[in-house]
Amino acid sequence: IVIDSVAALVPKAEIEGEMGDSKMGLQARLMSQAMRKLTATIGKTGCCCIFINQLREKIGVMFGNPETTTGGNALKFYASVRLDIRKSGAAIKDKEGNLIGNHVKVKVVKNKLAPPFRTAEFDIIFGEGISKSGEIVDLGVEYNVVEKSGAWYSYNGAKIAQGREAARQFLLDNPEVADEMEVKIKAQIAASGGPKKVPIKDGDMDSDE
Image (cartoon, rainbow, N blue to C red; front, side, top):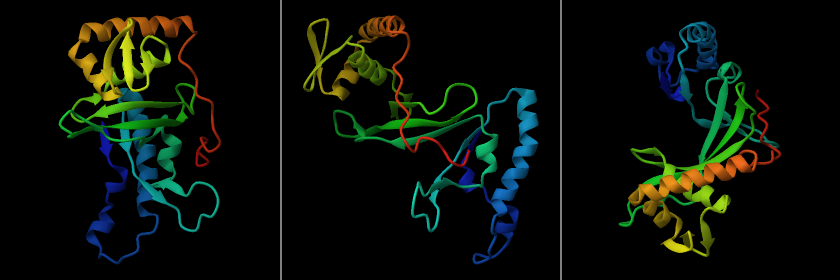
């Protein structure tokens, strides 16, 4: 079940009231009640519930991160995993210059199921999802399966593309090469003892948890 989004959930009292009425903390109180009721049901049914939220800025914050999510603190406390997803770098375009996706950076700000505070970067292609070919290009360079010299990408001594997006498109057009690269990358990761860990930076800890 996906709730998109928490910020768009409107309490009944707000709908029936006037535009200028003050409803301080109403959404936060309702979210707190909802979490208490939903947690037991979700646990019994084994259902995965995803809440998408939006960022707001706290008023009068002079030091530290002023950003916070809507709906109060209850959702933060009850959540098993929290991900901070932001656009990173230039948008992804096709050969005709049409916008087809975004490069995003994801930070795990809370995780009860695995070690938290890790980060990942990948492409999200509209209508497709996470781009596997983009991951193969990036990890191929990182684990020396793909050679990168300037803007050129080479594999097995032969140049395959100029530019990252062209290299990603090459793998889409040649799935057998992509499969071969994937096998080699997995072998390199296994030989190195697992994925490379990103060091925790100041500010990665969420003070609201």
